[in-house]
Image (cartoon, rainbow, N blue to C red; front, side, top):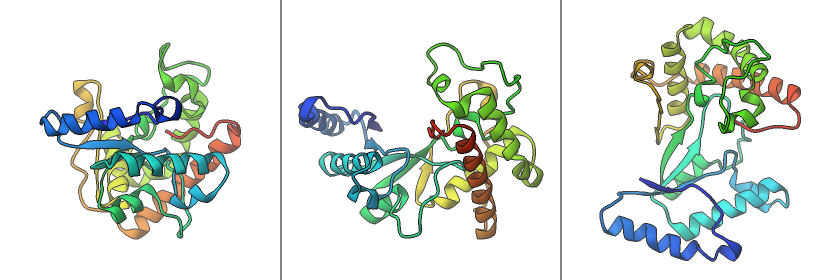
Length: 231
């Protein structure tokens, strides 16, 4: 898989046609098997009718989806993802409607959903140049708020990283049943944390997990009102 990760193709999309041609050439040559496009972190197709920033972002994504004709959409999806109205068409819905494969990423929230904060609320975990230093959710206070909010999930499903990873993966795959999940690791020991997820969650379990995630998001937005960046 090779993906369009950026939406910037120069002034007036001057490099877009060349990028599309090159991607399809890679596929014809057998160098790649699938062309992917990255979806916005938050998206509903109905937003494209708005004049708001999210409307502009939605229109841009739909335009690139039409131009690039990808085989696959890559989208962020986890317990802390935004909730949508029942009449809104999400990326998950859009992929299913158009017959495009869906890959979901950051299923573990880049560690937020399985890792104990560990450090005091004044300490920094990430090194210079790590993008997470710019996001309040990854700050010591943000990580602590998330970890404390996950307490009901730990009480029900287990306290180990493996148990938390298991329920996070099951939630993502149950709520995006046509998707494949991409799970990353940086060390050999982390591989043992990612286990076979098991059966799909029941509707009451999904609702309970979603409600817990919504409470955490509300708390984070109250503490960090000027930074709504999602993990």
